[in-house]
Length: 350
Ligand code: NAD
Ligand code: DAU
Image (cartoon, rainbow, N blue to C red; front, side, top):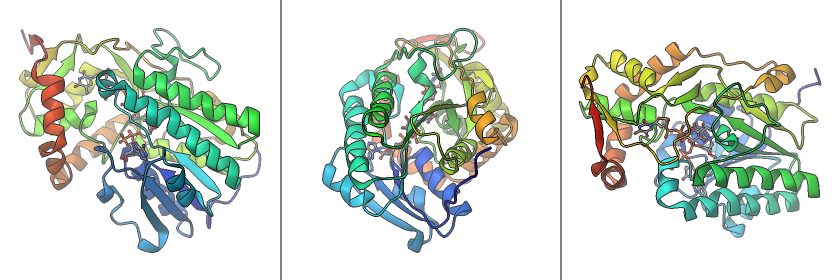
């Protein structure tokens, strides 16, 4: 295995660092490399929360409220950095069906702005955080990194654009790009539009859990801490520029199984489940093969799903002060638009 390189003392740009995975990454990274400094560039969209970075020592963090589509903000944020990870994105599939233009703007054009500046300043590593959704639905087997890309939602297509654009900057200009494609994350500070936090917080309030269609759609579920550890392993590894890595847990579950687990952990009845009209173009299954990453770095998931989901449910139980204001704000109008008129297909037990 090639010699690892030191990260302590580095200056790292984390775009989208006030979002779910980005903020968990900042906590994880500075916990392991306390002599490093993180610059967060975040537009604080509905999904970005400044409070997600509470507890980070001021000497370790520079927070810049700005947009990755803005070259001046990007230049300010990247100055003096030797590494950048791009988490900034519009990230929710249902919103991409509603307003696809915003996804193309941030998830494609924003990557272009970042790559241009990265080329100018000469970073030593640029990680483009992509997604397993770029492969489209994988009905059998596990997608390896060389599978064709066949994204099927505006979100996934925009991410595929950013993914390949970053790669093109490596192939064309030698920008030291690494692309990662991770499966579904869950964990603390996840915005409650996504399945796990939505169902946990609805169940706490005895509100219905809106399962799309049959509930048999399958995803691979990885705790966000394991995702962060994989990213650090890739930052430490020299000589992988231009390469793509899948990151997955090999822990596939369908929506009904997740729903059942959440209800059980909260001691809530199955009667909360509502089967509602399906998401248009709903991908039935994603499953990645992450053996390339494991072979190269020795990384493997450390958190078993049963343990991770129990800790996550507990986090939402303990942190109502984090999610209640979110659910009372912009989220209410979103929820009404997304679910208010949605046809109910089946009540639980019916
Ligand atoms: P999120 O929606 O919780 O956070 C996105 C963050 O990006 C927010 O802080 C938001 O304010 C910021 N942002 C959005 N547009 C911006 C812009 N134009 N300029 C600057 N900041 C902007 O998303 P997440 O779930 O934390 O996902 C982070 C990244 O990981 C995304 O790129 C996503 O595609 C990818 N990803 C997510 C998952 C998952 O399961 N959540 C899995 C694989 C990959
Ligand atoms: O696979 C990685 C991707 O995972 C990331 O790139 C995305 O950013 C992230 O949002 C996630 O996409 P999904 O569409 O898989 O996540 P979501 O939480 O929206 O949905 C998970 C599954 O649950 C999916 O099959 C749809 C279903 N679902 C979701 C919601 C919000 C429901 O049945 N009801 C719901 O209300």
